[in-house]
Length: 392
Image 1 (tube, rainbow, N blue to C red):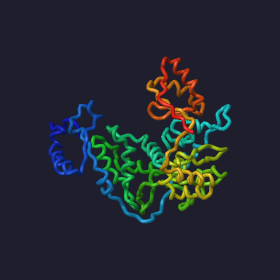
Image 2 (image 1 turned 90 degrees about the vertical axis):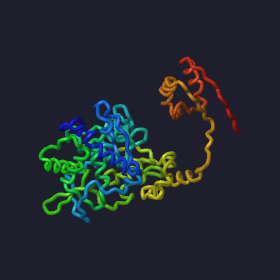
Image 3 (image 1 turned 60 degrees about the vertical axis):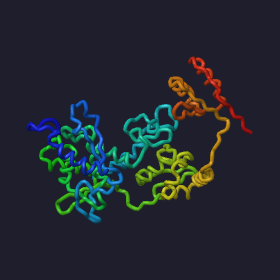
Image 4 (image 1 turned 45 degrees about the vertical axis):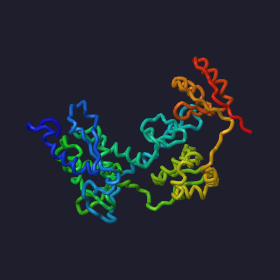
């Protein structure tokens, strides 16, 4: 819709509309707007670059983007395979590297796009594992080969569909043709593949096959809605997919664990692969950051009840809450030169006694000071001792 069409510019065509929006919505605080900077090089006018959104206080009360069909407890048609369960199995699929005793390739973190463990953290695409990350990965592959002309880089198709699906009401199902107004609004300059009805039906069918959409039938008509389409039985309890190994460690059954439960586990535990099983061990620091948030969750309740180490760790966190912890026999240094900080990190990070903090600070035991001093002087820098506090 940009540029000049039939002798009428974009500004001439929509100036009245924008004036009404500014007067009745923006000035009343109902709409927020900003100028998109990514279209400047396209020689778009200021009005064409305007982007609008509702404040969060209003957005949650908006109706869903389209009106769907209300169905209570319809019969779900399961897809041919469970993509997400197959994805979780990647954690265990890699073989050990040559010469490695316990660390597998899946733990190395060098496999792009795979679920893997690095430094005790479960990652997906180099980001911490969450249920939403897993679903977004699946959505991106769903729409990967779907081409729409003149699609905006600032609004990928996957993000549009996530936006739409996240805002559907409970028990609401949509017909594939109901997506047409959504696409026409989001991609006004695009020409949807012809025939549009076949395109929308194929889009939804692919989403169902990947498990991004749930599918049901009403007569000969198919309807869809957001859905995990999981093949596990509903109502599973943590004891069905968690097994205590000792007082600190437990195993996770990837064939049964709920995705949200796995997210909580990875937030509070150090993960590793033991034999052919995914195992976790409670981490004091990670648990202390979110214990108040997850302490009522059934997964944490199960761990607290069945693992003595978790119970002891939780008690220690409560005991130390709101108290100042003074570390003894530890030195801290501020390094203003970035190249020197990187040099020290590369030299001593593997020792296990060296910690690099945010900004310019590092922490290390006093025994490491002579080596750090030697490297610093060799690089042409000077060490200054700011203060030393002796304690009994």
